[in-house]
Amino acid sequence: MNYPVWEVPLLGGGLVIALIAIPHVFVSHFAIGGGIFLAFSEWRGRRDNRPELIELARRNSLFFVLVTLVFGAVTGVGIWFSIGLVHPPATSALIRNFVFAWAIEWVFFLVEIAAALLYYYSWDRVDWKTHQIIGWAYGIAAWMSLFVINGILAFMLTPGAWIENGSFWSAFFNPTYFPSLFIRTCVCLALAGLYALFMASREAPGAVHDSLVQYASKWLIPAFIGLPIFGAWFAARLPPLARAIVQGGAPTVTMFAVMSVVISGMIFVFAYFIAYRNPQSVNPAVALIFLVLGLGVTGVTEWVREAVRKPYVIYDYMYSNAVRKSEVAQLRETGVLAVAKWATVREIAPGNRLEAGREVFTLQCAYCHTIDGYNGIRLFVRGWSERFIGNQIRHLDELKRFMPPFAGNVAEREALAAWLASLNPGVPTPADDRATVAEVAERDLVAVGQEVYDFECANCHTLDGENPLRPKVRGWSQSYIAEQITRLEHLKGDMPPFEGTDAERRALAAYLATLNADAQAAGGAQ
Image 1 (tube, rainbow, N blue to C red):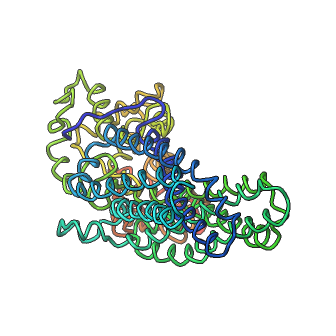
Image 2: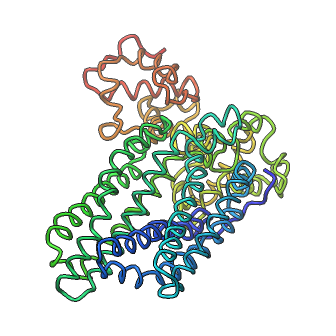
Image 3: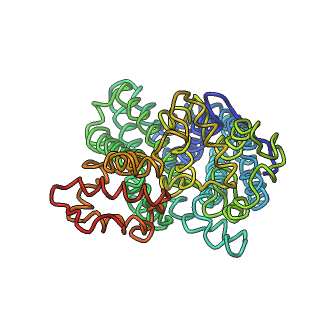
């Protein structure tokens, strides 16, 4: 709460980070795999007297200097700039914990840059043994950068014992550190192989073309042996909620996870059955398609890794809206406006309710949502009444497990609901959006119960489709249903309690009892 919130219209801060970070991920993995590829290819060419491998390394050394180092360095600075603006609390927490690790990584990166430049400019200027040493220094320094950065990235998903002991070593060598390191190493080698495959495919048809295509395809073997093993290891070390999200808790995340597996399998089929077994059939167009697929599956996998961390930015420590997990209970007492240093509204009064709601949105929601752009909130609440929105906010983390809990007091929650409702004018107001006790007594009980169902239940349940209610109440009498409604949170752990009036409970029970022809209304409503 000590930092201002940087709102980016239409794009949103999270998308700004992604637009910079995804190219950086591609380039950094290329740099690591490329450094190893160049050094190994030159060594293999000299050992086996294969001049085509030495020439392949020579031709591509400039590419790795210009693209992977220059572009990688620029996007790396861009990541620092964007995360510092979008999420300063999380950036501050990472710096405090990993400042010396980052300093060491910068040393390795400096060595990597210097070695890469020397490697390119010293071709035919130094003896081959010295040139080999420079090449291996480039490749090893690049991988050591990964060794350090991987600890910080893995920490954000699985901080492990650091939550209790605050130890740097517990944070760095966290539960997913080693599976993540091996996965990334496999990806680095595979991307280098796919790029080399594309470059090899540009050779004139003949023995050199076929030899280089086969050599490049072998660089994908470690990935397709290691990725299933290390991927299963990684999944086994995930926190339960993160594992549930990827296994179906969030359908979009599950779809992307499956997509990454399918595309990886397609690349393996291409690399072995086409590139290795029939190298003469590989042309630049085909190789380029699979290089793009390799980049695509890398981006998809990174997106899944980020998505399963929700609702946290640092798991079990800080939520995605910059509220620490330990602060939620206190903020529900004091309110967020009273303690946020940069808040423009401190107290909620009848005259500033909408203004206060907009401020609460900025503090609680704008880290992930825009109003009308990426992840736009206006579309999400279209057709929702103020009272319905308030109920959703109250149970936000229960209804959507990848959302953080609302950390504010009752007045702030109601102000936020009022402001969100104002985004789509014409929706019924709290006075007429739901039946009152008097209306229940005067109107048809079942009709009112259906209104209560629409308000209280329809956000999570359908009658006969996904998560259906009809089979759940089959054979239940109206009186039994009314009794169960009083204890929803005990029936199932992720169900919020029923917060309507007693009359609304009876009306809902009457409606649910009509869903099955064999439901008995005997005994009456309680």
